[in-house]
Length: 110
Image (cartoon, rainbow, N blue to C red; front, side, top):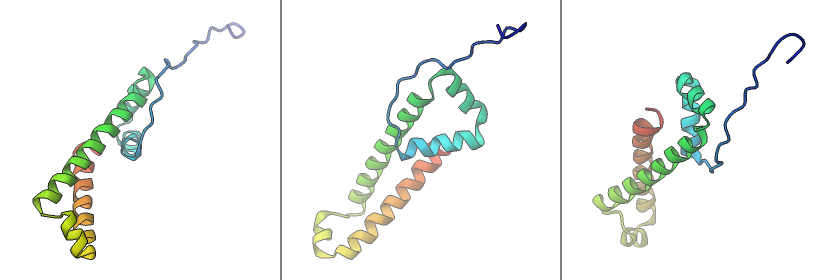
């Protein structure tokens, strides 16, 4: 009661604090800028942090698996690293960049 008016007592439900990595932070920024209704719904329901932590975990697993599979497919091995380090760095960076683009396109900005 504030004077003659009743004001609602609004508070967010308690939410479990989980660490959110770079993938989760980027998805959060995407939701804030482009999917405001989804962001607000997750925030007010108390599920935003767990949702972002889950997205972060999925993205990290997907990224690691794709890098490993692409490296095997393109024969980027420790042997190549020992023989020609610059070529290995070039190829592994190329693989990592492609994997990042796939994760961004299909999970983070979708």
